[in-house]
Image 1 (cartoon, rainbow, N blue to C red):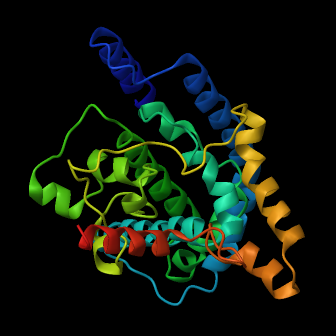
Image 2 (cartoon, rainbow, N blue to C red):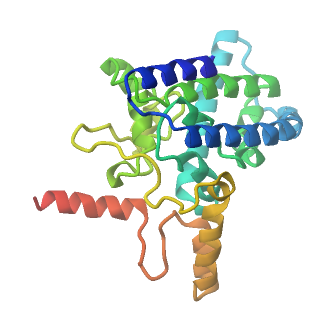
Length: 283
């Protein structure tokens, strides 16, 4: 379904000369999706058995089918928000997640530009669901459903929706903000299905007409081949670790947010956003 809709968007872009797609970028997205699918397939058995093992130690069970699936989807969506937020606030995980943000374009195939190594650790964020009494098959199915929704919001062809929808659900407008490199928009709108988590936990930012979205990273990698897109942040992190003067600083380069530096030469997103607010306040 997502692939068919992607072709429709490509046709729309071509007919209206929107230039939402480029051949190189789209092929890179598809290549990275293929690599992620291969790793996913390799990890699916281990993921299933780990979830199934933890299910033996479930703390309770929900017997009403409607309540069961409602709680499972809500729980899965919240834990995805936690996983995603970790990917933005811990540099080690950002080094893996950054692949998804590396495109300077934003279209439905951008959703295919997967975080290649996420399947290696994603299951550990979903283990609480097994302990809550949800079986492995249902957890994996809930993830599939929410993932499909998450792919569909990677589009510029849909503007803002009804205010009620915009308040509750992740929409294309919210996700355009998430993929922006504008200082105001960094590390915002982490949700997959519900934007409520971001509203409640302080990571929400509306798309503003006066601050047009610029897609990609604050510093784009010089080489845009698929291999460098996957590994460039690991290389940058390794270089930072080497130049750090103390063991403590080396560890901070791994676990502190992206942009942290021991000498203040670079800043994390929150500090950059504070500077922006102060600058705007002086105008």
